[in-house]
Length: 365
Image (cartoon, rainbow, N blue to C red; front, side):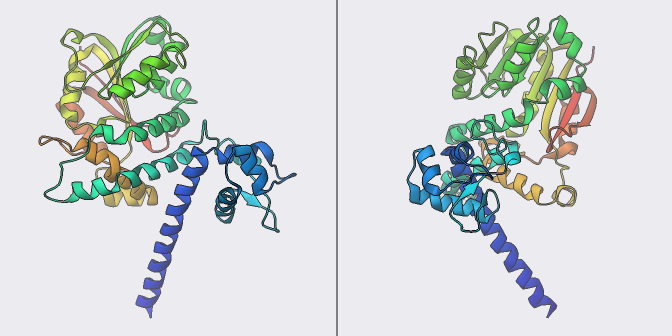
């Protein structure tokens, strides 16, 4: 009897997983097509609107919009009337569901369609005779979504909450040289350069698309900043003339994607000035999946899954790769930082960046 009960619970769990998978894709659809925005624009609790009203506002076909609204309403993501033909978004959820600036975990739903597109390639990577991993170029959309997630996670807290942990605020005010490794589209540099005009910021990324996007952003998002620049570079081989150049080197959520993070960290150590600071924001794993499950529950499965579909394949795509994955964890990270020559290694909680932890360390004088 107990075995049957256990099997029934397992099957219910699988049903829930399947449901959530479809819902995740449906939320992603709503974000991409700006259906949440359209619903928020025309409807309210006081005046809910029909599928036709929402479809007209979104410029989409009514019947498809109706099916999407029903999906979202049955999942209690949005609300519907008892008659089942009018809908609205509760006021407190509208900002979280905005297509332009969604909440970070809402934005995470956009990863699912991307993973679907590379599904067959990941199957090949699993095979013993298959490729070692995946090229960064296979994930162009991933980095656009990651940029949106970074905006959502970091914009409100980068200056006021994160920066004080580094002890660098006064140095940046007076003037510092800063390098951001794995800069993506440049969001962190734009934000920092605007707030600290006396400092100079350089961003490097292995992706040419990311560097082009960041450079273009200097005249739009960067508002014509003159103290920021972006260069395509592999972190394993930074410029020779950069030896002991930088007061601060940062990595935001990018070290675990490196094929040889050990070599990248040694290069970062080389380009830091004596006494310079290195900060590495990373996923807060423990280096033990059982402990991860105990400490963060189902979120650990999500993070290992994201690693399987993206971070591990791009970080494994060479014969000498260390194949870290997203959840390499604090134990292995601290060991690698020490091996690269860093001192005063601290692992600092970042409650304002919920799934992350900050590694703060220095280059000896």
